[in-house]
Length: 464
Ligand code: URP
Ligand code: ZN
Image 1 (tube, rainbow, N blue to C red):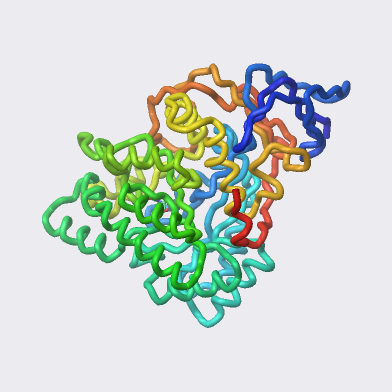
Image 2: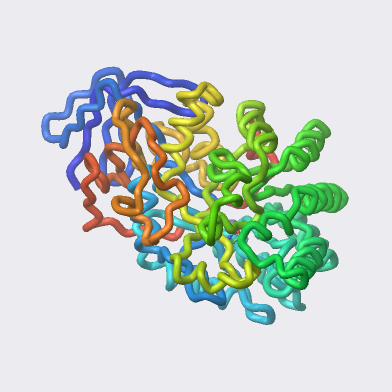
């Protein structure tokens, strides 16, 4: 593989920004210095541009099996869209059927992910607990390099778990120094409200929002924090959306409990007015938890700069209109989820950095450094320095673009960010030493994502 020399850009890491050249050899960063000379290397001029560590998306659902068919992006189209947006690593999920061996489900998922163009890993989802589950958890950690376990406290009739299973998961994970990630919504409250709504003829998408109140989330966050504290298990709460949830998380952190929180761009970008649209349009925003109020949206932005929220994932889970329409006369049948794997950096740069809600270094911390650190990838990813994987984004801060289903790479006829104008693009994206995106043109010929073996999660790993 030819060496690549990136000249004159500003390298942006979570802790500092410096102007320097970068030499890439094979799939690693070989050298970083003020001025590097290398006659034979392929040269990229990065003057007046930023160089970021490739973004890591710790929360995506590619090729997710649901009652309306698979989510719209598979591992190929989803990873292509990720690359187009500057994301070079993703973490998806293994969701065993109840009663199915976790390891068997992992093998199936690995074969589905073979088409992935970028490096990837999985969180294992304990959807049930049996006599082999503790051994299977250990096997995931020691043999498979999977050190995070995602539980759902909603979706009680399918993949959600009850408190006694949750206790088993916390206890076994804590014993093995693993991390438990949680979808926090109180499934009982939601089930009741959904049944009541349908009984009363309230069938439109807006009732997805009405039947998942923010209290159903914060109640579940509160429980997760307390139960994990008792069992001394570190936790990571996915897609936090509400001000009340943030208060509980802030308090736990103040008490030195190892609690990480994630939010997603859609909760930062939108408010509940999206559910007041005419007709069936609001179905595009049917996701769980739902988009919240302006007050919650502001609290989320504030939580980014105050380190309450440590990570931003996309929860990428797009569905096409023909899939959403299955719930046209019953909102409970609308598949939950929306796409966004492609837009995370553009949204955060335009509406976070340029609006001075976060700094550029904080954006890198939230989208790259912290996800790498929390999920055991920081020996290879999340920081631009010698010896790391050559996953890099050359960011042109001056170019404007507009989101449209006509030019996005996501394989979906819905884009919740449709029409939004942004400033700054990932002009060149290098994935493990290969220029995958060059001024918007795609070159994925030689790319092959690799399943990442992650390091065991250790509490001490997370020190800043
Ligand atoms: O609505 C969502 N978030 N869909 C994806 C699955 C999940 O709950 O994370
Ligand atoms: Zn999700």
